[in-house]
Image (cartoon, rainbow, N blue to C red):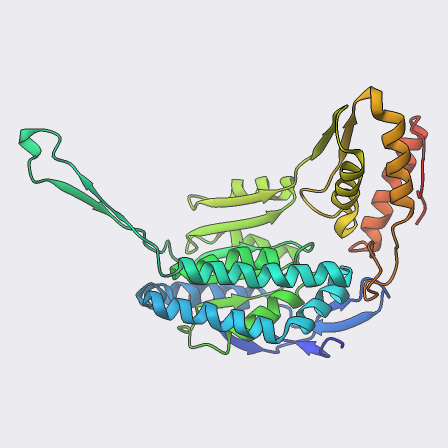
Length: 355
């Protein structure tokens, strides 16, 4: 199974092929796997305008209509499961078993959003706290915020786009999405399936674009909410430029693990190795520091090194591969530089260490 020769972007629900300017590389072979239409400023502006126009029609959708769209997506994701998984293998270098897991999470996210779409409730609050207020009551309900802007990262191209798209559809918000340029295919496949529905025109636009285009997704005052997943430096900068709109950020962490003296070491090693090397470490919750009780340090270190040495690296399409390629040569070189810097500063290299 391979990718199509070229993919469109989606502007106001419709596929458009104005160019083939964005090359998507197979992260394992390093060869161009496909080409994607790249949105310019005019296309982004039209996508935002279309989302604004769709605000009222989207808000007017009945709960069962929103649910039907999400249910359609769930059914189609299941039908195209293998295609979606292979797209992750190729564009993100994600090992096939992990790719299947991400497709499962994509389906779960849309399924849960479907369930929630018909139970977006409000509340009636009694206000008769004194004789003067006898018979008074208050009511509140949730309403769609309006046109939303989404920027998703490279490491989970399906699932992190889904975390934005599915809730927006569940509540009736139109959106424009900028997927990561390194991994746009997953989001575009979601767009292809959304285009099969009868959502109001302008309900969604999925627009791969150059990094400079992020400003259009951030600063446009017609957009009522920005959701960004990515690095802290970029995220806080976007928030500072977003103006008055609410901003939802999901940023990187510095995840530490503590292994105490009475820990089950076999279980700890198993979970830490997975947490550290899953997705080649390219995860905001990946294990970055391990703090070990002095009494078990030597035993734990030996077990950890033995387990790590046994991990299979290579072609992500192979069932046995656990560590695939990093997202780019630049990132691989950056990681190698960290290792060399640590060794130069006195660290001991226990295994690996070479590209």
